Length: 371
Image (cartoon, rainbow, N blue to C red; front, top):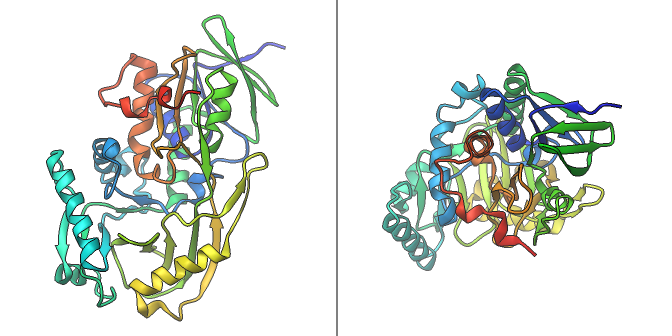
């Protein structure tokens, strides 16, 4: 049987895979996306959808600021505002020592030439978040950050990608990648495709795809948890995190409180099954209650754990393979990839179509993880 053909195959139907497929289609590429379950099933559908430049690793700051500008015009890209609101993100200090650590962070970013992180005192913190506990002494704010609706975002990127001619094949696993004249043979459990380029957007399975092409790397995964409450009247606009606690706290447009911040459950990478750790969730609830005493009687209605790739340095892998020409990576976002979605796909699309990108992605080279 003859292999089906496309210019580029994208392995992984999460938001980064969809964004890259869209960027390639806009550049005239014939693109097929393979997703072993369904689009947005893993990290993209489990995220709290923070659009955050605040507190980024220094290697990511410049890229995150470019992405933030795209979020403020996201409807121009996908025809939907994706539920994005730029009401700011704040990291709260609960004591003078934490306040000093935030001041040091503000000095670091300023010395690097960035001015998006602003130190605020207790009065400004209470103006922005009136319900914050009285013991909090200040914080660090990125006023143009915010959050979006993950499911609206997935639907918008999928709809726009398919409208530009991208083929999405769900329920199909890629089982092998074989070098072929002028490109690669993508072997799946539903047939073989012949392509010129392959994008590894496989998330927690990104390291597995690397092994398929003889590029083994040091790579792990996370099972970050989120829980949501009953619907409440509007009470908070910014997204709030804490300098000394594992916490992310926001209110959705539906009124639910969405609480996460890196609380970890467990996962089986082979089966893809994740489990919630209720003891860890209880600690998250205690942290939320410490900063927001008024929510003490609010009911939690559901919780879940996602599954995402996590290199040891928690930085993503972005760019061309160093061992397999025609393979390009974009995975391992370690729980902070949502904000970067509008820009990383374009970077990889530029590498594929132009052989370069205007963005510096040296810190994200796969070679740093090579075994």
